[in-house]
Length: 318
Image (cartoon, rainbow, N blue to C red; front, side):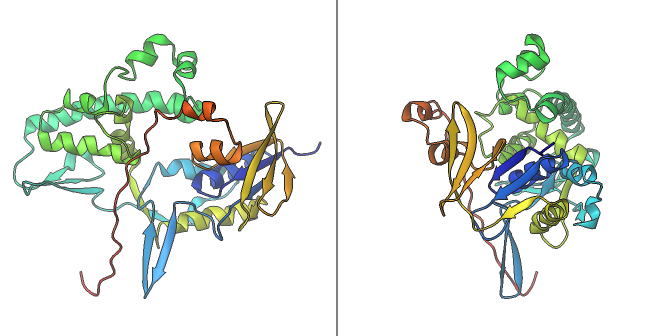
């Protein structure tokens, strides 16, 4: 029986992970990346003896990546090694106070005496709430790809979809309802940084992130975060997943409401059975499937995520 062919558009971490997942399930896989190397937003800059991670600087939920290796009969630690820093985050405040998050919530550190026994009790209550949210999300969103409210209703039912996800609250409301210390509220609100949103607008279900970070840990890839992409590429090569660099996909052709082939910028046509796009959603609809303006207008309500300014500095002293 001939294998079905999967076409992956984009070689970021999502595209590489999809390629490996499909290869592990028996598909013939071809990945196409317009740049000269894989990794997408995960990149590296080497200059004047210094090496800078561009894009992600920390790794969370490493077990999700580890599964790609174990499913292929490999061990992740043979491709790259990860380590836990002593301090997950160091949070500075305008009044001069400081809070250090560590992997053991009971050993959270702060300057002065800004966290009382009552504050620690509040934090434990919040983390119990965060754990419940995480367990709900893991069983559906992570394991069954639940992405819409209609899908959530089918998997969880109406009661659980509304009440077990704190449906009517924002992220900040979920935090401030359980924590009184203003410094601690800001720390928990700041977990929204993972999705580039605002805690005053984002849904309360994102309060599952603190538990995910504390429970699964926060990690750094030894030698630089880009080694994660290097390790995934090596695994792709070993499993026989096709890698096509410097190859831009210009169009995903839809025939009879079904994707059938891609066209490269060089004019080559490649047919497939299933297609995965690692591009941002709206640009993919605009540039790949060339949707109508009326179709695209329904995405106008989604504001772009906020950006940040990062300085990469190499120094000759600490």
